[in-house]
Length: 257
Image (cartoon, rainbow, N blue to C red; front, side, top):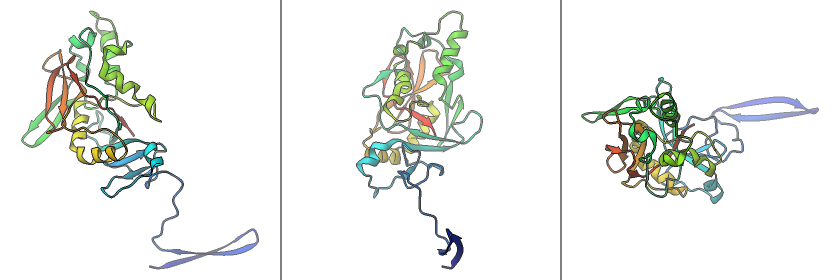
């Protein structure tokens, strides 16, 4: 390894620094091993200062580090983008403690075909693609807009108790250092999360988070085939199902980084 020698004058004193080629400067004071500005990849454990540490089976975190974890990265790419932009998505450590409904039966959206949030899975052999609204980040707000524009009903989304799955996602930030930006994933985003279930679940458990196991989780996506149904997805095999909106399933939340 070659060396470079730099000299200079500081406060009247001559100094000499020997730099080994290929060396990197000492890291700044952040919690993880990767700087907040570094590219984040699936399996990265994200801390409250925006830094992260890649998960490995040999990884050990201090109690202080565990308390600073707020999410685990599960996806980086363009498949979950409505406009073709690359997105990095992370999942919160904790799920809704019990199963809950997408919406209650008396909610306006429970009986309407909310067309702006339709997302349809398409399986072709071993390949799965998604058509429609693949980005679920604004789906609850799209429901509100749809109801406002529909003359036969009123926007009842301000009563969040009528939409339990969405309500949990929107209030999840109060439990973390990042209050805004959490949402109920689309079926496309939920499928990408399932694709990286092994590393995400292992990282989450290390940090005191919840397991997905083989449970069914709600997506925020409306089914195109029926106004009464939304998609849920099973974390045993990655299968999706068209289910009644007031049926109860588990809920996880995600956000973009």
